[in-house]
Amino acid sequence: MAAEAVDSRLEERWREILSVHARTLAEIDRTLHPYGLGASDFEVLDILATSPPAEGEHCRVQNLAGRIHLSQSALSRLIARLEKDGLVVRSACAEDRRGVYVTLTRKGRDLHAEVLPLQRAALTRALGG
Image 1 (cartoon, rainbow, N blue to C red):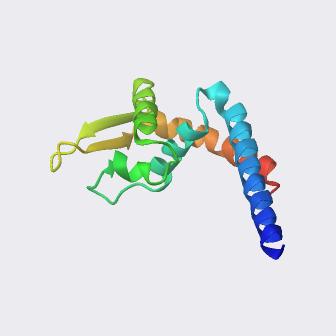
Image 2: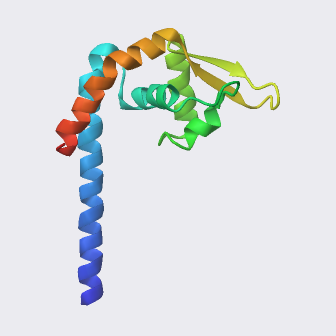
């Protein structure tokens, strides 16, 4: 009986986490839609803008994959779309031909700076401050 109560609380907590996540993504998507961005697009731009690699280093797509909660193929499509829009550039890794670097462009950096306060406000609305 006690185990069932624990299971029930875990299940309830899990569903609440999923609900908060879905509401937060929807709020960010609505906020950024006029700028041609979604929540995942912003996350890539934000990581590239706020956690740039050390001088002389590059950000590999596989490093982004560990921080963006998308499949490898979905992340590749997202980066291709951002590249098409001129927000990032991709380049081949000379040391490992399978590797791909991704770098924020000036346009991407400017758009990130423009929408950053909007995304943070959406987070505040969705998560209650």
